[in-house]
Length: 307
Image 1 (spheres, rainbow, N blue to C red):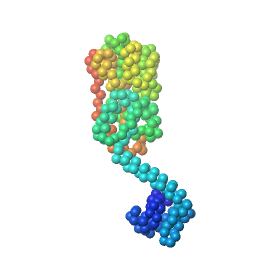
Image 2: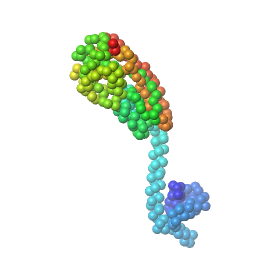
Image 3: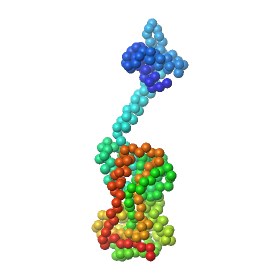
Image 4: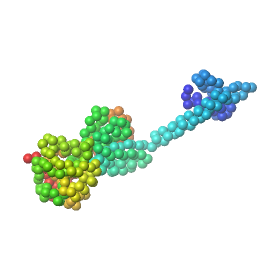
């Protein structure tokens, strides 16, 4: 039994004859008769009584007509909805907090220019949570700075980034051109939450050098961390892409890690079995335009050394 059978049955019931249904559906009369016979055999009921060359629907037929009308209506609605979705492109885009803050709004703007009818849903969270959403097919693609652990996800480095140490004018480090890694011991920090790629990279750096710091602020919002740095005499580590305005105004001083341990890439991530749509391919091309990293220069920039 198929939707086609039901549509033929409804046409026969509405027109009251096989020939009328055939004319309405642009089918041959034998085709209509065969479909009704197949339905009757399938359900083992009589749908019509044939009296004096006329068709009269049976009680069982009226019951089927009510249900068939609902089923065909729902099917037609499904078809219309899916046909409409085929004409309207969509993208469920995830990002880690850093990427979502400094890049994704501009990326979405460019996607909307290329696909005027695109429907984009964007979610920003830490790398760990974005990874889970990709594995559960809740996202089509994502851009993250942290490490992806699942072998079922494809990771493509697309954008260069670098963490920097940051302090405000009230901090003892502000007037130094060079600071040493051991000086971080016992310092107060405002840091991202566990699960963040930024925090993980910094913790790996500290662990490798046996350095312990005091985390007195924890937040998943970069602006919250910067406000803590400006008001509460703490340090933070985050992407240099996030603080250009404050650096330009002289409110912050940053220190570049000379060892290069804080260099990293933002990665485009999607499931290995994901169909790469034109929207995902366009996303990758747009991200490539942001590949280069222009670090601040001048007296607002110092250096962090191991020795």
